[in-house]
Image (cartoon, rainbow, N blue to C red):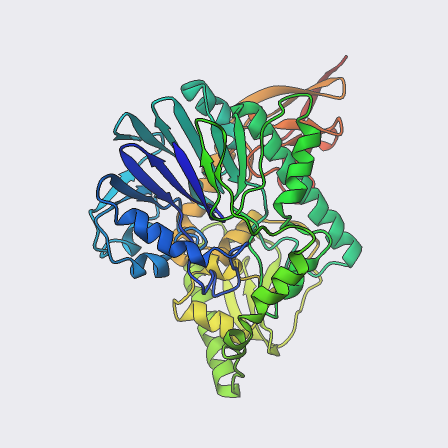
Length: 520
């Protein structure tokens, strides 16, 4: 087995009978309305992938893990001339990915359910799905003769990794995401000190989840992948140079793993570049790209990279007339009214949501969940609120269906604040989900809350009875871990629950209803 790193979450896996291209994100226009770009730049590998897909001596597959545009690059897929390959796709409840590829001329698609296997030559491909509404993602495992590669990419499979290991036992190479991909705290209005504290905590939490995944899977080699991206838009360029944020480069992760796993499970974890080739049998580089981005040349590299896009971004900015601003405000009101119609859990939200046009601060939409009313307004009326401000031209792209709400959330071209600073899953769902998915999302949360299974955990010399399933998205807390002698951490999204405070979450209004049973 030979693995070529294509950059970000992309890999080309070659076995004697087949070539599997995974999540090829290669387009030079980036992703999420050109907010994200590949780091390091990998556009030159488009020709390499085209060549591999033209090799008819093998079966050829293109695996797309989920519909996020840094994994599902339809621009690149449309550029392919040779299309006699087969897609391998996850079978999510929401059929958006399958529908987007329904008219694509290829050899068709194999749509896999969770745990389903696709035979290839002397081995197989297995998909594992996370379909929890706020998250839709999949992981892929390829086994051929004596070699095995598990690519978890962004998939929150952490609480199931023990089962995956028990099923396959020997995993040679493991890859998973180590960088963040959310708008908290990146887009929130925090003082600098608070921003750094939150970002550092999230970064270390992600690193620790990666370390625990490695300890569970016990691979012979770990490949850091699925992040971070970089930001070339002048509106976002400063994020690349923040001393601490949720987009750490691989060098930070590798230093953490070297220290953290030195005694428990030291693993070979090379710093890979797009174009590097791994020989799985030898567990080393078969080819190593000579020009490499490192901490010493990072600043110069980024300035040169961004310089190539200065004209591109200059052409994308345009002012909106008063009439256009009013049209966007009216369209946003109508969109939220449609969302409210399918939002059966609105009565559970006591705070109002405000959405403001960033280039017209007096044009806001007020969403009153209790009264199920959506109205235009010119100011914030309460002390308890959630506010999102975004450029009207970006919101317009969502209203025109050029961006989904989830894609919009990942542009990071918005500012957010909440009073009090408490996360609420329902508001997050209302903002980033399409209207047709909201009702099912609410039903999913109610189903998670209705689970009454409990388990016993021990922390700081005391045993606690807790709800077994995380109230966020239903992860099994039996696969979590204890931090600081009192916090139970969910393995999937790393929410922390304070066992000394009835199991309340640090940053949301959720609880796992912890009850102290005895003192040791």
